[in-house]
Image (cartoon, rainbow, N blue to C red; front, side, top):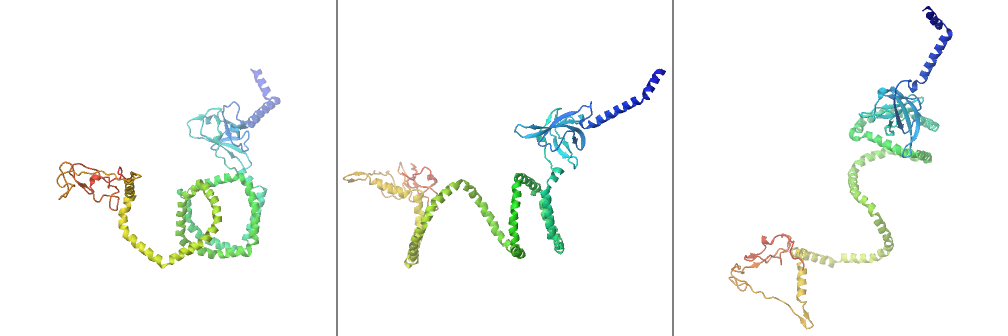
Amino acid sequence: MSRNRSGLQGVASSPVVIGAVTVLVIIVAVFLAYNANNGLPFVSTYDLKARVPNADALVKGNDVRIGGVLVGTVKSVVPVQKKNGDVAAELSLSLDKNTEPLPVDSTVTIRPKSALGLKFLQITPGRSSKGFEAGATIPVEAATPEPVDIDQFFDMFDKPTRDAIRQNLAGFGNALAGRAPQLNEAIGALRRLAVNGQPVLRTIVAPSTNFAGFWRALEALSATVAPVAETQAGLFVALDQTFGAFARVSRPYIQETIEKSPSTLDTANADLPVLRPFLHDSQRFFAALQPGAKALGDTSPFIAEALHAGIPVLNASPVLNNQLQPTAEALLTFQQSSGVFNGLELLTDTNQVLDPSLKFIVPAQTTCNYATLAFKFLASANSLGNGQGHWLNFISFQPAEGPNSEAGQASAPASGPGQNYLHFNPYPQTGAPGQPNVCEAGNEKYIPGKTVIGNTEVFGNKTRGQVTKK
């Protein structure tokens, strides 16, 4: 027993052994500290992959955080090519086991960790009940939105931009120097602007205004013009000549314009309310023109053909215009003649006399075509004949026998017996004013065994099926 104790005491008291153990502990501690970003050894992890459109300076060993809490590290960053040919970055992630499973609707965002450019990967867990299995890949669609980091913001201020800002500050400083009284007056006048601006601001923040949609539209506009940024920069360079031209005419022309603008605005304030009805009518007029303007796209080829065809006509129009002058003079002389005036008065009187008759005669032709039928039947009656002459065919009609028969004098309308019934309509309906739109003359229905005189309801009130042509 004493020998073992003495052996242990010898080892513990040996400087070589103590130094070796100390060095070993230091090496293990340094190894663990160096590999801390890659995870502790012998600790199980939840490994995933994530794809992002741009790694954005994210490197191996950067943190992975959820809600600001460190939950893992980035093991590697490699480029991959998608099916459409675009290139994305694939991140291999080593996460703590307590994050498993990560919901499949989670999103990833690369965020700055410090102002020095260090980045970390932020994961925002979703609410889905399904999760990514170990080794799965978070799709690139989950890497949205793409935030603007502070380093990207500072990259905007390159040397040309800083020089331009310096020149602007110098120019605005010179413009404001010595104008303190005017600035004080402007600040005092801003009180009215603040009071009168409250209704405007309330309108802007109202949900119906959709002010957020305005900024989204500006974002879309900025994304649209971003590819032509260099062209726009060239535009501002070219504008230097324009502003140089303005500088040459600033005194006295632009200065006088500014001095006279207040009186012009006062006049506009007085005249614009008067113009408001005109502008309102113009708005309705242009709204009514919209269908025609839309139709111009389809009819423009025909309009172009008409314009081309009209050019020779317009070239010949001076000759026609010269020939029209004698005609116009003759018409003027005719109009100034007293006989023409008397003739027009007589024609007016004639029309007034004929108007009641025409109101009844015209519908007989326009509705029932009676005049055409009459002339047609007259022509047909005289159409039979030969070289010796023409003849007229007719059929004799034997009235029915009985009391008050149409064959002789009668004291009352025939009303039987047998076929001895009177059928007579002296004023048939022909669509004249006050009459239904029917053509009863020649279309009366023969009703046997009944006396029918005049227009009765048995004839109906429709023209369908009635003879208006032969």
